[in-house]
Image (cartoon, rainbow, N blue to C red; front, side):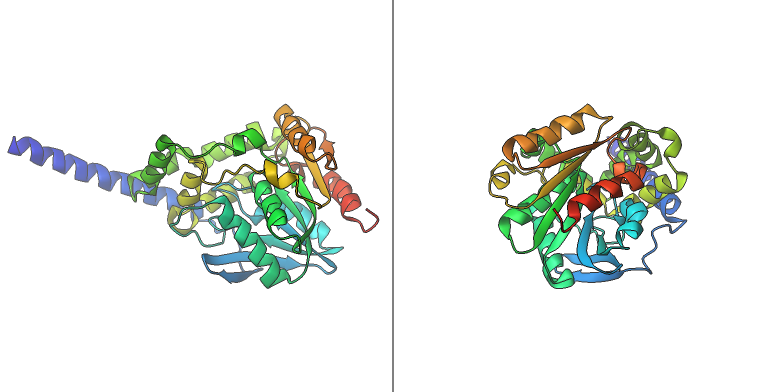
Length: 318
């Protein structure tokens, strides 16, 4: 029995060392090109961690907030930020847990991001701003509008998430999954199995882009680097998101909003259209515009058409 226990202990130790080496190799592979350049931006010293942002252009303030995934960052806006900066003072942010911002070992919640958005506008922008927000980050902006009507003017949402899906709360199983991912070696290994270059490419092919020929290798590598930057600490955000800690029932927020809201959807994904219609059902004043032959990222796939639609909505004539 002692020999068997000793053998099991040795095998367990060797297994842990092997997994650790695999994790370390993946981190080195993901970050070796240093594609996420932070020299062009600044850091906002927020109470939960340093937040990377870039300011460019002159004019009315405009805040750009990327989709919320472990691999996401402000790079999502690189094709339209420069165009928007010709007319606006554009602030592009890497949200906490993403990209070049810090990735603390904490429980990420919807109210955490509502507070971040509110504080960033008050402390860095310093005046009421228009906001363009993508995907899973859309509810945070609506909640921020409902909590404080002095910080956000017009809102453009790109493919906001399904309201029913967002209302689901954490379960015992999801809480257990969060604890597992938070563990140092095994949790990191499971994260690496689910978030890697292959899975990111699949997202671009099946969810993000309509035209596969428009997908750039550099974008895949940049997302891959973002997901493993800072020793793969994006896994904490990933665990909380998958465990529904970032979900919120925002139906009650919609009825209280007085902001002008515009939704842009990728017409090639019927789910995007259905989700947008849900928001309009609760707030009929919401305008919806579809961009043909795009999916989740119309601003990346067709930046010129996206800008053409957005500039009309954000113009003072509206």
